Length: 384
Ligand code: UDP
Image 1 (cartoon, helix red, strand yellow):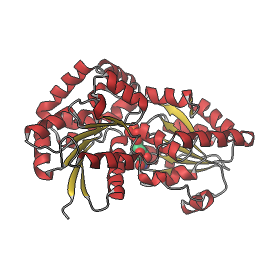
Image 2 (cartoon, helix red, strand yellow):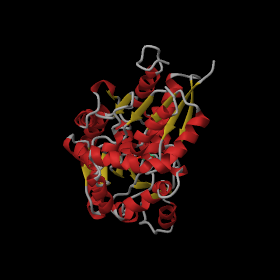
Image 3 (tube, protein in one colour):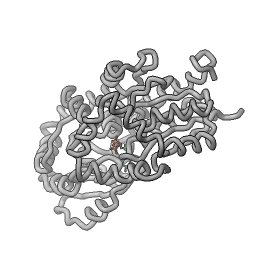
Image 4 (tube, protein in one colour):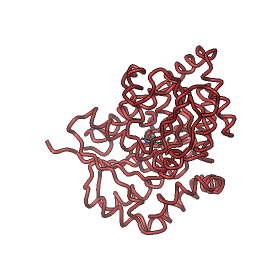
């Protein structure tokens, strides 16, 4: 049987969009074995400067100038400004998309990035393709206006809050589906035995374990946070996952740690699900992917930061639903870690884990896969 070709458009701005693409790819393979050939592509990276430089500039921008990024995000977060931004992308992006579509000849196109919505849809149709075009929004609440493309046949949303925003932005209600944040289907499997898992990962099986992350790029005040947690007074083990931030790995590897505390430093890991299941608590920035993965792993979440604009709503949601705690200064984070891991908090921590699990949507990637496949059914609006 000829496989149907599903092209997923994403960009390496942070780690969340690539992770979402991968989750949907795995969801399609699992729900429909041998039916799809999935192609994941980053058209922004192939575009000429300045669009081509956006992916590379994003990490340093949000790390060093978060207020500037937040101000630009808020100023441009309206349908008119979004339309102007999409128009500005046109000269750089359209030729890349045309080449990509000619090579991939997709039966279905899916975007998991707000900058790859309007032009991606327009270039697809201008080329005469009838392949359905879908958008999977990966911001939990404060989704930027650039996400909302009314011509998309499907707009999958992670939460009811994002769907309400989409309606306010004028999206046709019959295109909207609340299906959850796409996280890898392995998060839906039963949690393994924690003691054995820790041993497999080279950790002490019995020690309280804190996982510190800063998204795909290892963002935030990670060295100060690691130092603070290591010195919080408990005999814990700390796992720092630095993602693509190689400088952070080098820096932390040279750091002297207090005796009685063990610190494991990793760069980009491919098995976040294992590290999350091995941990008792995660300290992270408010990235939507990490948050929804941590909830699926039943992890209490302590937030050390958020991106102004797109991640503000994530912080609000976690606090309002008693799913997370937030502190800004590394000393305050360290104090919260010591508080939550103290033996007298065991029952509260367990209740927190249960709340996390009940707020999770671990099979979202499979639900998204089913909705995407539905677009190719003869009964759907466009036909197969
Ligand atoms: N991630 C990973 N390995 C790493 C670091 C991060 O697989 O070493 C994944 C993480 O599990 C999540 C994504 O990268 O799926 C980060 O997405 P998030 O939305 O949390 O933040 P972003 O990096 O986009 O700011």
